[in-house]
Length: 125
Image 1: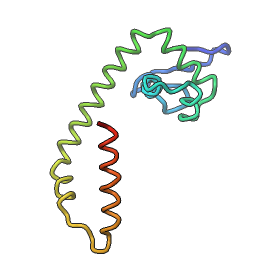
Image 2 (image 1 turned 90 degrees about the vertical axis):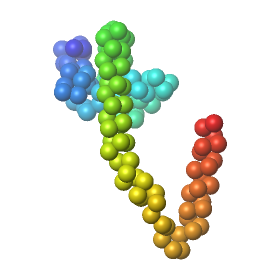
Image 3 (image 1 turned 30 degrees about the horizontal axis):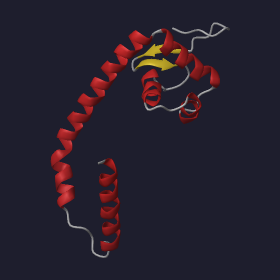
């Protein structure tokens, strides 16, 4: 684990994996943002971390890159398995909700929502 100058542990292993001490922020959360090209200061502010905490996380990731990357890949695999499980489990429910007719008087709202959805799909393509 990473220790600061005053011998305080900054990166610890919890049941959720490698975590920044004193927070619920895992190193895998930080890596997600790093891979999305977020600057360290924005990551720090997003997770409400101190400079010492974000620097400890970045230092630990850099010093243990192979180990952390292997664990990160396992986390991504587990996340995908969980997402697929819940998607399958809720598929019928979402289909029923989608088939439910809209309440009267909300036609303008639904038209605007569909317009925004179409724009988003067009931007993704």
